[in-house]
Image (cartoon, rainbow, N blue to C red; front, side, top):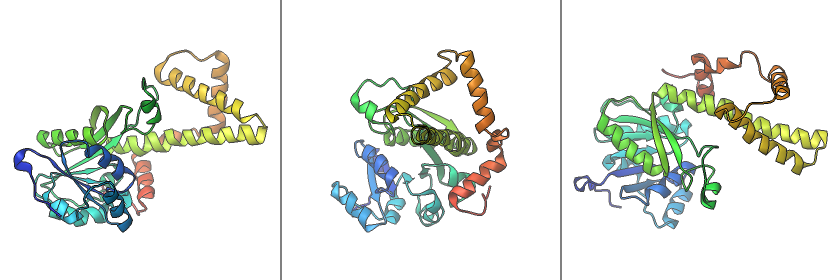
Length: 291
């Protein structure tokens, strides 16, 4: 399997470690359409067979790490520590190590090395307010296929050239991308998990539970309940996040009752540093963060 770099000709060599995983497949499918030289790395035999079934060559991760300009660690957060410990020592100075979630970086689990550049980039997914115009855009709820999305990325290495290289790869692997917003590792960790998983995704699950209660406990026909919930979810988000229309006085009273009945008074503590450390440690199944 050939691993000679072609950097002299201006080609960026990208290694995707975990190329057959959920996110590894997504980023690989986008990178294969670019001019970048992409090396696909996968440990599991089933994953290797999947990559070959697409007509792509499987490259040993250690060989790929030794020649890559950018190494994308598309593996679960819980194994980023040992995977980075195996591969980072093999990298050439100046290599960009790109992870897809901030938890491991925030927790201090990535293998440290001063002469490589650690970047984390997480997709925002297509906005609920995105103006979709095609069936493909409507079908792409996750992003990375047809519907444009933003990306939030963290880099604290201070090298503008490496940051530009990282952004070029980020725009390619999450395409189509509207904008890349640069923040610190901690700020990205506050966004993911606190803002979007601890709060937004939890609210989404709560809406599903509420729909179930409405249908199966109260007895409202499901079609009617689902139609009412989906339409009013759109209105609720537009009114609160965009200020499109004011809520009625009666609605405001009901909203206050809902807050009193459902939301804990101290809920904003999830934004405290200690709570962020706690949820990330729980997600990574570790005793505590190392920062």
